[in-house]
Image (tube, rainbow, N blue to C red):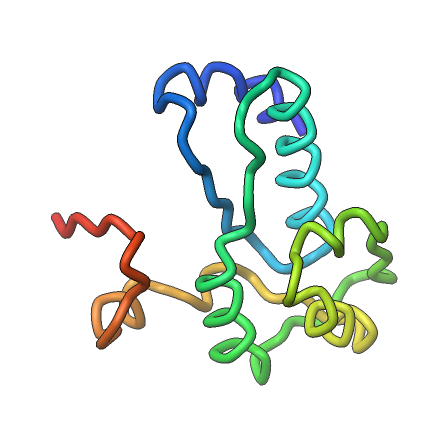
Length: 125
């Protein structure tokens, strides 16, 4: 949660524009951006939104590769709500006591994707 201290600095660097977050699909992976979003809102900055395109790809590509949790997966209702329309799918995953690392949406998939959302800026090195 140490990274929450950088929210104001990040917005100062990028300006007040939309920010989307994509991370592991597990309780901490939902809690961190939800808390960061609340902190941003408290500072009068834009909310941090989930990158739903990436989370959908993660659920599609990784569902069969879901990793078993080392302990019970318990997720706060506010954290689940942050995931908006994908909250039910995440709840199903957690009910199976599994989680998905963001790395399932990797370079190979993105490089070969035939389409990307129009609002995603891509710069290939």
